[in-house]
Image 1: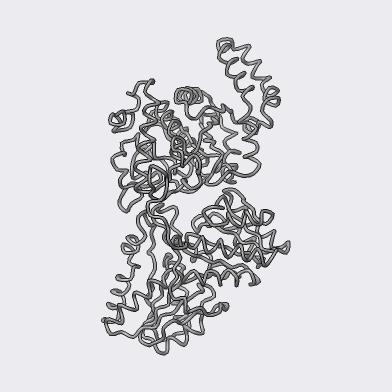
Image 2: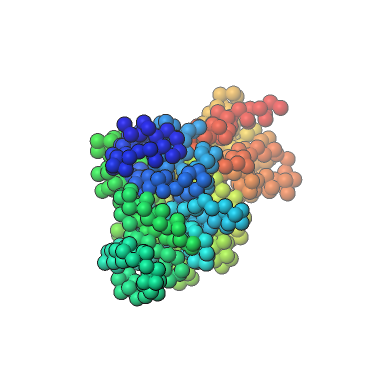
Length: 616
């Protein structure tokens, strides 16, 4: 096999050009085989195989630098840089990351995980290179989906001023996670069809490259041709040299174009056309489903362990459709995550009240604020780690004006395999610091439904955070009406009070059982609200509990536990608070159960901490 010859960076350059198609097929087979077992980002990686090969052939790694936007499409890059033997550990605790990581390889130059950052980072590296008087190439690879993010345009605005080489590769597969949306997608569609201009340009330049006078004349007139054949020419009009579209599955053409772009003393954009999921029929037909996939059967793409119970996204989807039917003021918003957040059904039922803002969380929040002022009830469904990008808009545009916007915060808490950039462990800390914001977390699927109904009736901003994965259906006999700032007492005894928030209620049940086995009386309370906290209950609980244990799947600093402890300290109440939360750290990738144990927030660890505290 050709892959056997590739064991370190640069080995691909020893492969004959005639063997490139065979190598590309071996890489695809390898990716399908490995990801079918571990899970991971499949469709995007299958589409970027030839592009990655061309980059490794055209560049001198690790001297030259590649920044992968988001980084979920970097698996082939990992294979070509000596990491293929680690793919059995992909996205597992202690194993290979699913994203670029500088600690893994000197060819990974920027840790990524969120979109639209690569051009800004690349510009910074270009500036550092030039200040140091060095001459290495800097290449940012960004998808058309990421080009819907505002940060990319801020960077393009600055890239236009460059008088030094910088290469931007636009990997255009007409998708982000779902299909790309918006004006830039429409513009790129027009470019994709502009073969007449592109062929003319390539042929003329190739034949007249030795005649500088003629070429310069053509350069002066080229804008007229572009306006004729390629409507808008946005990038060239900005001052960025545009090359393409190039067939993203033709290694030789890609390599040649990258080498030519390296000679230009300004910012160059190479527009590469690829097919998401290429080479694997199930992924080609369903690229969104195979964007980030669980383990699957290679022969048909069916999940190895199909879900038998509803997850929180299913519950959210069902409730949103019901709310949409009852109230025509309810509007659903997503940032390129209609499938992931569960809004696909709402989109199909109420297309006029569904908005996909693209990968543009800041815009989505301010847009929601405008909708609220206009008399509607926007619900913005977003992953916890992506909502961070819109901090200022939440604070200034929503909370400052006390607007009726609901934030449905998906993937809150530990999400597992995607690692540091995707763990939703900071939202409680920053959201509870905002005046007018209400922050809630359901203990089970029934309570998620009740909280969504509460939020659409509450006059002001509300954030509901819920975890990834199967929805907990226990404790369904406890379903008190949701009342602002009021907790729910599930079991009431004395001595120890477990005050658990959201996903930690299920764990608190197990903790209580372990404490009871040790003869310890234990109250279990579903906190429901991280803000406002139930000060009445806390005040009362301090009278008959020696220890209050707060439990949350969030960092400790600024979290729910700190709010409870601050209230008890400020009121000089005679009860000790033990805060169970995540420390001041970023959390790596791995199975969520393993991560909880490592972080000391699983049932066994929590019970042991409480027993140690009691026995002091």
